[in-house]
Image 1 (cartoon, each protein chain N blue to C red):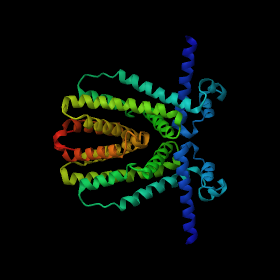
Image 2 (spheres, rainbow over the protein chains, first blue to last red):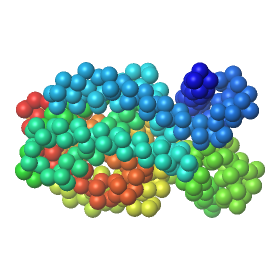
Image 3 (cartoon, chains in turn brown, cyan):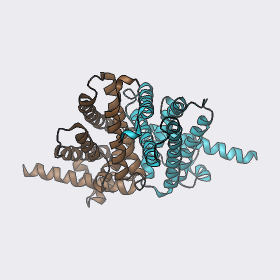
Image 4 (tube, rainbow over the protein chains, first blue to last red):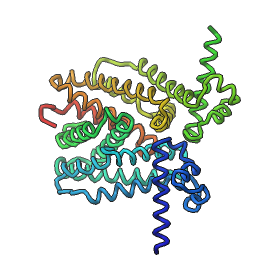
Length: 204
Length: 204
């Protein structure tokens, strides 16, 4: 198996080179040639691992997704819905340099996926996984605080939470000094508190 | 003055050609050559109007911004804070084809602005204008429903509203069938209602 491991390691190295190029120069400069140069390889050797730029970008994005999922599995969840929701949501925000880089790759990838059909299945998969995560956060909160809420109310709250999370992340990438880790955490805290305080029976 | 008007008209025509290329093929294909071809001009004539690709993209984005502001000025505001807030926020969401195209250009522009210093002043200007709009929505709502709320609470709610709006818009661009106009309007309605129902004195 060592050959397969090496092959995967080399792909990871190339994906990381792609990240650096995207972060530094933008997606439109992330050509096979530039990424190969960044990784210290010839464009020909890069094509041994990825036959197209789209394939390489999809792999880079998948690497982000795998890393985020690994970190989430390691979180010290307690079973207390509000604390657990905060823990999970903070993990999905660009609160430090590593997460900022991941988020910037996600933003560039998403913008490109709009016009690249080869990237759409992965974009859809990531969207669906994230949405499922938001649905489960809302389920935990509602089962504790609004067990009578309807399916429709829960679905609406899951989309509201997911949109808030992605909007915050993008604003933080755009305006790091204005929307910093403290602001993002306060907004999420306020949002969760407001969900748990609302009485869905009061209308809306 | 007719010459100046013609010059501006020609720039608009080029900006619209840029939109079409961005929407159809993505930002990385929006080269001076491709945009000139789309507009039926030579790359040389395009350079008569825009000396760089960044200048052309900035002009296209500014055109989006001008159009949105014109539409907002024409909205039938009533002075009733909740109804007015909904009217304004819906105008900023991709609820039809024209607004979807504008939003897709904004997303591509934002992703590119992260690595193009020439685009950053305009990106910052648009962010600041939008943020100011959100601050004024929250002011109107809070003056009516929570006049005792602190400056900090208002600032936090403005960022929460702005993040929600941009997150919804991006999700709708990514997943038009899942996050359609109806879902976006319901989420905004629920959000405004929840803000007006909350009692900030209850903590958060």
